[in-house]
Image (cartoon, rainbow, N blue to C red; front, top):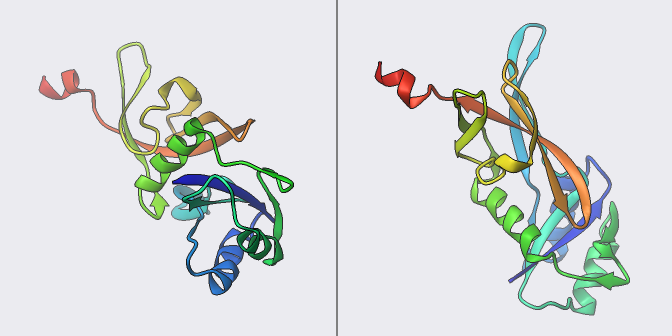
Length: 175
């Protein structure tokens, strides 16, 4: 199965997904959503937002999309383009597909990763959506418990912020 990416008007991903599913219930669009805990007026609030704002993903068994499917995608409200270009549609490369599959394996809403910090204050991901992306982490905010990672998706670099939960180091817990 090949993954394809489409760009829609940012903030309208869920609406596009719903409108498209009415016309083509045989194709499942994936909108990758994360949840973060933030503070509003001093109180913790859970906020859900898009991991890739303006992008949806779908699987197709062939490397080429049928003209009917392309027409259905293009005619749905809020559509912008099929990546890399609507006139040159290509499936995502294997590296991008692996990233999308990893995020989709975390469930419909991506939660926090579990991490520990070693004696040199380096982050080590135990499990969650940050697993395997340690080398791509460009910024860590321990107080807010968020990590910024740099991903290269569809030949463009994107930074995304994901939450994490700090576990005590194993050596510290034993003493």
